[in-house]
Image (cartoon, rainbow, N blue to C red):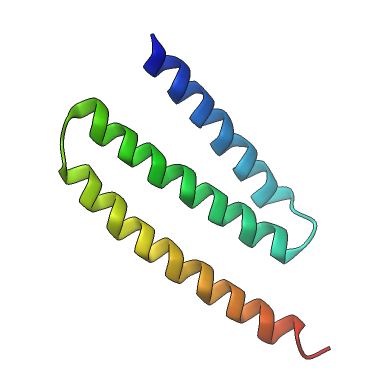
Amino acid sequence: MITIIVFSLVGLGILFAVIRLLKGPTAADRVVSLDTFNVIVIGTIALLAHVFDNNLYLDIAIVYGILAFLETIVFARYLEGHYGNR
C-alpha cells in the first residue's frame, strides 16, 4: 500500500515537472524543470532497485545521473552564450 502512495506522488511530481517544461515562460525555467524531472527519474530508478531488490538498477541510476548532469551543463552553457551577450 505504501508503494502505491509513493509511486503516485512521484508520478504527480513528474507531471508537474513536465507541465513546467512545456509551459515555462523562459528557457531557464525549462532547464530547471528538466533537471527536476531528471532528479525524480533517478530517485524512481533507485526506488525500483529497492522494490525489486536488484542492484543493477542502481548502476543504471548512476549512469543516468551522470548523463543528466552533463545535459544540464550543456544547456546552461548554451543559455549563457545565447542570453549572455545582450
